Length: 85
Length: 264
Ligand SMILES: Nc1ncnc2c1ncn2[C@@H]1O[C@H](COP(=O)(O)OP(=O)(O)OP(=O)(O)O)[C@@H](O)[C@H]1O
Ligand SMILES: [Mg+2]
Image 1 (cartoon, each protein chain N blue to C red):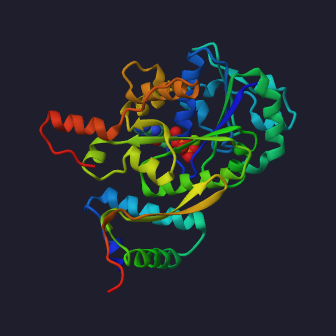
Image 2: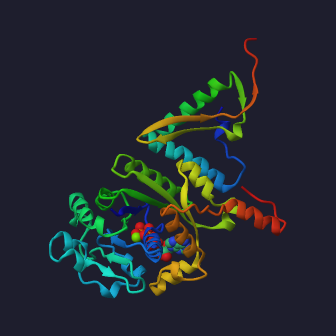
């Protein structure tokens, strides 16, 4: 489940980008690290019932919209799953 | 009516004063009437970066306290006709001026200049609040580092609930070789993280250090890469469509030339 938070592509700038995206989302929403982690995990675990995402490209972040905020989840689809079974 | 633009960053030492001096100089060279106001009370620097430190008599605090007329606290740069500086006070602190006083001062000056650039102090305390109070637009400077980008996001958030209608981003001190080796955030990374397109991308450049030593603006140094980019930022502020050199694409091109594999 939390494999998503592992380092991507190994370069230090990718780690920086990942950390920044998370910390800025937290700053923007004024929520704890745990909140964001749990929300991200829940969103991904709901999605994987239906799709197999490209875990290296998954991002869940809070973006700014003027004075408000928007939860933006990006889960590139590698494959769709069969329902039922 | 002139445009009042605050140059701010949150984090200190990322290049606000340098950008203010250079973009201001470039605008003046383009024929615009420019006033630079140093709002970093107690830590004035814009005067030395511009080499004007010996000409100061009165400062912004003297103006708001009515110890002199506004004109007496404005120094006209002799190198170009259109550049003017109102220095900060060196002996008083951030609380010597209120937001109201700043707004009143700017509304009095606004119709006399095409551009008023405010050099903002680091931080988000009273000095920052004063500087953003009278501004219509902001330039946010950040370097491609974690703490600087985070602080830039914070000030962008704080300005969202102010009168500031437009925010431009400048990414400063980019080191292309580090970007290529994957050890520095690229311009595009910073844009992506902040959700904001940049108006300028300035390389880390030794000519800035030299220019600052001399009290000369980098825009006046012919072969200064950073100087050229500050000039481009001024042109973009004036509405010219000058594309930003893509640090990744350029790096990839160089790497291709030398037969290396491109990164990022
Ligand atoms: N593009 C650049 N390349 C190399 N050096 C730079 C560049 N931009 C700024 N610097 C250097 O970084 C230092 C800090 O710059 P500057 O004083 O403009 O930052 P500042 O944001 O105004 O700082 P403060 O928050 O203390 O007011 C200076 O020594 C300056 O010469
Ligand atoms: Mg400064």
